Length: 259
Image 1 (cartoon, rainbow, N blue to C red):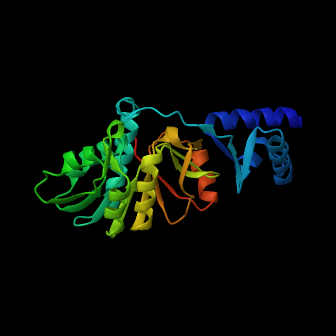
Image 2: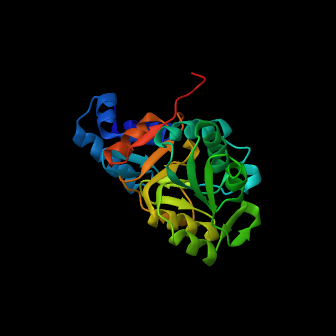
Image 3: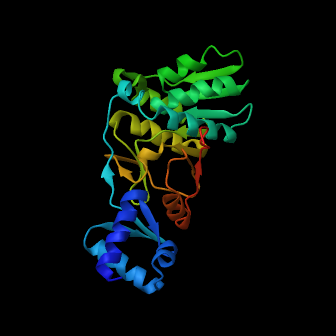
């Protein structure tokens, strides 16, 4: 197979899976690792991919931003699946922080059925309304200015409230996640709140459905870090999971309940 033909096949794999591993390409095309590295370098110079440790990822697109009402109707099964997986990381009696957004709503509905006693910190009115009446939950609402479109609080008062708290585990729901650009979001009012959770939490859990991986958004919340725990649904291609692992980022995938 000529180099240009092989590179077209590599590009097709990238478009399908979002990533390729060097070892996988060596096996697929029965060529040397030097040949694969040369292919990936040429393709990067042509602007067709981004090389990372252990392979390459597709060029990132901007993740479209929609209002909360629309997001509440998108990827519902995926959000529930990853939320079910996240329950495995929570213990009775934990002090947890919960970000705002559509995934936070599904996550919170599961929380109230799975646990008897938790302390919950949130700036989301939706999360507060879902959990405040639970008999054994202690819920702290960090209020301030109200962002109507997101049903969430923001601003100096909210930041001040969060800065006085120590949280064991915070669950963040960003708009986009990528190796190159990190954990990103769109809402200028709310990304500062997300960053505050990072400052005051022992552990950070990043929950994002598979449509959000290797995408960009306007505002960077945090770099990728092996200290964070990343949870998604079963639709994320295994090739992408492998490339993230090569870069010391472990992703936990939900179990497809429908087989």
